Structures are given as C-alpha cells and as structure tokens.
Image 1 (cartoon, rainbow, N blue to C red):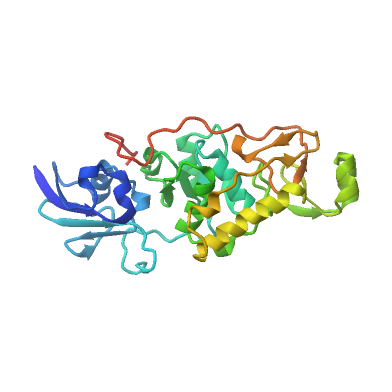
Image 2 (cartoon, rainbow, N blue to C red; image 1 turned 90 degrees about the vertical axis):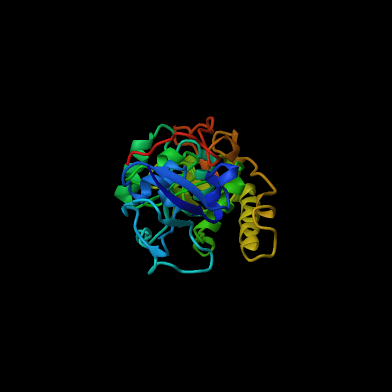
Length: 314
C-alpha cells in the first residue's frame, strides 16, 4: 500500500467531507495510479482543477503517483494567472459556450436571456452532453459530479447554488463574463441568435394589442419565434443591471442580483409564461411557433456536497 499527503484548496473543498476540508490528509492506494484517478476517487472532478503540484512541481493529470509525495490541488485562481505554470489546464474556448444537463433548465433560460450561448435539451443524457462538449468546445454546466469526471469533458463546472438566479450570477462570476453579456440577443426557447424583422413580415402572427403599441421586432431564424419589447423587458433589463452592479462591487455579490424573480412574458396566444417553469422567452412577447418550451426542472442528482463511491469513465 502506497500513501501520499494531499490537500485541496479553495472551492475544491466543496466536494470533500468536512473532516478533509482545508487540511492536508493521508491517502493510500495500490499500484501507481494517475493523479487524475486519485483526485476523482476523492470526489473532485478534474475540470474543477486548475493547478496540480506534486512535491512543488506542476504536473499533468497523467502523472503517476508512487507514494511518499506531497500533492497540492488548486481551483482556478481569481487574480493570479497560472496558464504557463499549469500542466492540467487545457486551452480555454475562444468564446464561452455552454452545454447544460437536464437539471439546469432554468439556468439555461437565464444564460440565453443575457446573450450567452447555452445548449440545453431536456432529454439529453450524460454521454451526449460529454460528446457535445468535446465536439463543440463547450463548457459543461451540471449539478452531477459523475458527468464532470468523464474523460471527454475538458471544461466544466459544478454549479453550487440552488436558486436559478443565483446560479446565473455564480456562472457569470466564475467565468468572468460580465463584459460579454449581450442581453436579449438569443432565443430563450432554442438558443438561436435573434435577427431584426420588419413588422409587416410577422403582422399576421401578432396579437392586436401588440400591433398597436410596438414597432420593433426580432425573430429567431431557427424556430421562428418573434420577440418584441413588452412590459416584461424593463424588468429583465433591471435584473441584468443589478448583476452588472454586483460585479462592480456596488451591491453584495450573489444577493442583490437575485432579489426578484422574473414576471410573465406576453405570448401571441394570450397566455403567460414564467422562467420559473423552465427556459422561457423573456423581456419580450413571442408569437407562438406551435411547439412548447422545455419542461421545468426535475429532481437533482448527487450534487456538489460529499458523495461516496462515484466513478468517472476514465
């Protein structure tokens, strides 16, 4: 039996049982396992790790441990750039693009609301999500650590917050995206990029009251959804402004940005929808396309707290 002394730093402690948090502890194993396998056997998914030191030297996930080493495992640094030092960090995507599992439907809607590329499908399984992330250089967002442990997942994050609006602030903060927000430029239903459209082109699909009061419209070329700046638009804009203010330190991060839930968005069929029911259209009305938005969130799997015995795919 070979043993090492290992310590996890910062937010990586979220994945550990209480007695192992913020302390160095002894861990024993057989043979000469790769560092990645040891780290994930202790509960920490590899995409959460930004720097791995063995006896003070930066090594990659494939480094074989023989016993007797001192291992330090770090999350991404907030104010220190370690790109040249880290041997585990893959090159980040040039543009932040996400793929979410089916437990984060509401977050998917919010990410689209602020203009971020967020792929989501309610019935997508872990294998499909991991394959999509690899093929399209997307960042996996999930509450399930087992998904993050798949070898195909190079970039990923386990969302800690439970409230969808707090999740939005958490993700934007984690990936430093406040300067990349482009609110109301994506379709909340399918993630397509909205394009301006003349009122005459969509006239027959608009409710009478909308025709009378609104002159500017956008349309999703993918699903055909039509948007206008209804009364809900101002409320969502204020929410985004609170997020940006929190990022500048003018309001408590993760608190003021999440005070108010979104109200209903007008639809061409006279009904109303709320983001609380799943990824919906926001900040505008939408002319119906004959297809419903995704269903709401389902029950959560094992999340970011301590989990025993979960395994990745290697």
